[in-house]
Amino acid sequence: MYKTDYPKGFKDGFLWGGATAANQVEGGWNLDGKGMTTAEVIRKSEKRTEMNLGSVTMKAIEEAMADTTTDHYPKRRGIDFYHNYKEDIKLFAEMGFKSYRMSMAWARIFPKGNETEPNEEGLAFYDRVFDELAKYDIEPVVTLSHYEMPLDLTIKQNGWASRDTITSFTRYTDVVLKRYKDKVRYWLTFNEINVSSFGFMETGAVDSELTEKEQLQIRYQAVHHQFIASALVVEQARKINPNFEVGCMLARMQTYPSTPNPADVRAAQKNDDLNLFFTDVQVRGEYPEYMNRYFKENDVHISMEPGDEAILKMGTVSYLSFSYYMSMVTSAGKTGDTSLGNMINGEKNPYLETSDWGWQIDPVGLRITLNAMWDRYRVPLFIVENGIGALDKLGADGKVHDDYRIKYLEEHIIQMKEAVMDGVDLMGYTMWGCIDLISASTSEMSKRYGFIYVDQDDDGNGSLKRYKKDSFDWYKQVIEANGQNI
Ligand code: BGP
Image 1: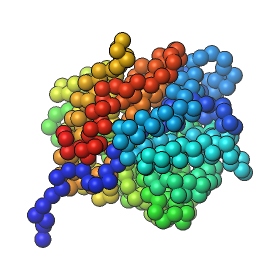
Image 2: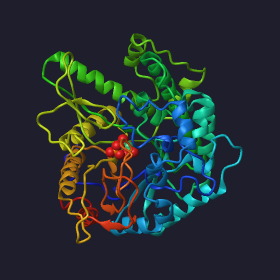
Image 3: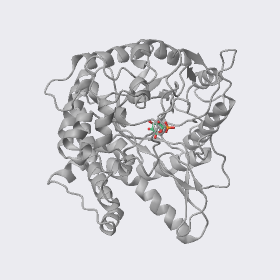
Image 4: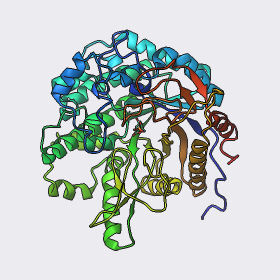
């Protein structure tokens, strides 16, 4: 019997909130015993693109470690959340946040990645943050690894290229899962795990001097190690606290064909499979068949150990989270005009407008993605990143009139609601960069996402004072009404 009714809006307890990552907000990069991370050797002057995510060399790392220039400062200084977290969380609470997605800097806990004992001061910092969130009933959603790892693991074992990194990671996760057992319920293992197939930022493996073929090999092997690590975390979590929810996190790139030509439709389907490969493994617990052919044709050989298959099967996630900023277009043969994108570029979609950074804005694409992912996986979905990077201007009145941001978010939330009415199980929405932070791809401050403006420019000048943007009050109303006001 089919149901004669359908949901009219977001469920009770919907996790409205915002998201950040440790390396983009915290600062305090060398305080209280913290070790250096891979995020802190990335130069501001070297723009990250699909092509150079893997371009960090060992020489560049050595230079960064010795560096006295300011080229690496943005992620080392962040917006000084390390000292401002109380003020920032208070502002989140004022907006009525139900959840706050944040990440932990692994190198605060294990500065060099392989110590036998964790760094107590690092653990104490996150205790303070979680306690502050608890004061306002804000549920933390914690990413265990968001584009960073202890730099020593890169130097000594080439990051996730080495199987040994699984042990380093699960030692860290064992400590934090136990320590925060009663403070955190929602965990995410790797931010945008698919970005590992683009290189250094996610794998922590230096592969810039390798051929393309060798890069593909090392990156997919690194991905395999992350899959195993993630599955082992799910198992650890089950034992430590059965109420834990451990999810995966994908940079979702819904791909459209450039024309109805079946060849283009097939090209788009293939692209989509390469994107969904990661969630196929983490949600379904096994490598999908179509990847066997892809690996064969691209001469990639994944080295697996006996027992790996069983680990993947046992360690499937209980929810699927993803970032959504745009959709992509692809063709089978010739490629049209290029459009810029989040980590990866595609073709221009003539029906869409773009952000100041050329990302194609596509709210309906979010609904398409939500419906398709729900159909494919049937596990609760969580949008943990969505938003618009813009060149906000602080006016003389101390305000930022960001009507374009309100428009962007409103249009996306309308589509989320449509998907929910279609029956999609959506757990929450954490808008990316709820407070202005350092951009992941440009290492700049001027690409702003927040409801809260932070006074700092690309050169690190500014008071770091926080100001509410117009979107601040708008989002507060959305949360208050549980999205029923739009
Ligand atoms: C995602 C990352 C975030 C974030 C966001 C916006 O890919 O998970 O860390 O930065 O994109 O990207 P950017 O900062 O490059 O505008």
